[in-house]
Image (cartoon, rainbow, N blue to C red):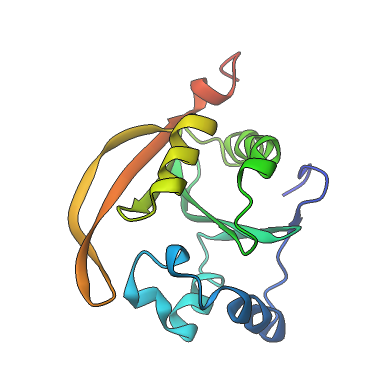
Amino acid sequence: MNNLPTGVKLLVAAPKHLEEIWDKIKGYDAIFGNDYMRDQMTYMNQFLEKDTVVLEMDGGIILLTHIIPGLRCEVHVVFWDHKLSARKEKLKELMVWAFLTFDLFRIETFVASYARALMRFIEKKMGFTYEGTMRQRVLHKGLPTDLKVYSILREEVLEDGN
């Protein structure tokens, strides 16, 4: 996990620290595309999964989940100040780091259909490609909700394909 971009560090999964993060994000509707993840223990347990890496930077966290080295992972971006555009370059550096560190071919993300600003950011600013819609994939406020699927490929991020 060496060579993280400046200002980014690996999250230390101490219970008190995880609770502090939970307290910051529990009220943000857009963070939770699935009612299942609104449970504190379910959400905090995600941090402890073997195939998950959680990175911290000023104002938020980046979760890399379901990492399959040599193939793919999912990315989930959580900023409690909601200032994604200001972090675009740092997030791009983190994608390069993830592709190289885990020898990935693709990074995926799933966005709830109501999170339109996040969809625009992922597609227009970060260069992800919309792949389709998973219809009624999650529950949001007790109602079935669609998830939009986006991905970005290694060669789209690493110009020389390394």
